[in-house]
Image 1 (cartoon, rainbow over the protein chains, first blue to last red):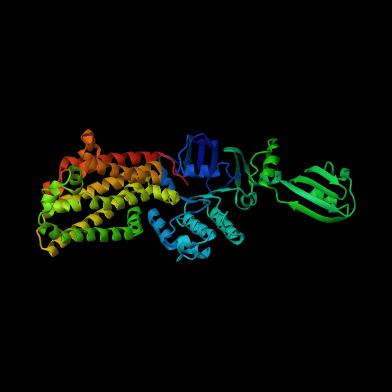
Image 2 (image 1 turned 135 degrees about the vertical axis):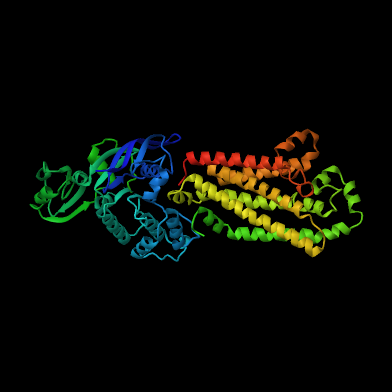
Length: 303
Length: 265
């Protein structure tokens, strides 16, 4: 498989401040790769390095076989890019903006028009008059309109409402099915789970793991809280497969589950159950489950 | 007008170019229509000659003030002309790159398949084009006004003075553009460029009568622009080349630094 993105020891410092450190990464053609991490972990730095908007302190990035520094114009010709907050010329109408960027890229407006229709975007409005969500739609359209071989999207859905997020996810899956390669940063595990094949976890500037989504999901913790009609004994829930941190106080049980909840459900079913609540694992919990790391204090910004 | 960065930049500045051009036409007309009043005023030359040296430095040479070219030299090419073109040029120069960066639009522009050098040069080209329109408008105002007022104006002298003014404006604007491109800081770019203009003006006028400061005239942009009184004596090629050279060095340095620095989000 051709690797469309390869980074070797990619490092960026902003003066004293850490951007990313020693990122080694490979993304194969046709993959949807998610870069998952809390805010400030270095996701945006990584993406801006790819596009040569900032330059590495050391190491290198190769996109589509081209060096990010030496061949940045050719790279950008073949890459669609969307930042988390799409800011552009407020006085232009959406159509004028798209026309301008289409001209700079040297292709036609046809795909831009159809994407705008798909996302129900009014092209006659000025960018400055659009809500943040609609502005982000313009960003989406311009990222996809050149039908690029590689898409680099930085927190693409953060400003979109749930319906549009779903539409965006469908678009990503279509592009992936058409053989496109996508590199998507996100702080939402739920999103990465839906659209990505592989995920890299970035933490404090370092890429700490790259995993298939399926593997990560197996290891992800689910917090479960169960309320029973009568008091239960903690012994009934000890040693269950994938269940840990079991705490019972009178009629209430809390625990963490990795993988399937099957054994817990079967053990629970022996009692009369009033209520079950399970919480989607937060990124922090995934991290903790994944690394069994004792430094729990950091990166609490998993919002 | 959205075909490329050059045309887009011109499009953005179209209103500004229009208003400034109305201003330079008006200046040309106003000064030329006013000139006969000065020419016909008796005793004006004597009055000027009696003024202290420092006021003559400001107003203009007493001997030539009542000639058409001398009057225009004093009233257009010594202060108002360079003021208008440099304000236009510095505003356009700071907006070009540092302005886009501070309003967060540069990032997305540079994500397109276009080199930073090309962006910088196209923006410089748009600035030079806008400035050209202003300068031509001034020429039209001056020539038309002299016709209305019914006096002969040296076309070659006026044209040369306008060329010199154009080069001066280009120097100020491209200096601002270069500092902005190199640093990404609009305030710094505008401040330094305006400072160069103001200090240059002071060194070449008020301070030119201070003997101790005489050698400092050579660092003044105004010295290279019009110490030769271009409308009367023609272009001093060496002076003009000095301005062009300084500008070329500034732009080259900006291309280099803009290419190697990080662009902020």
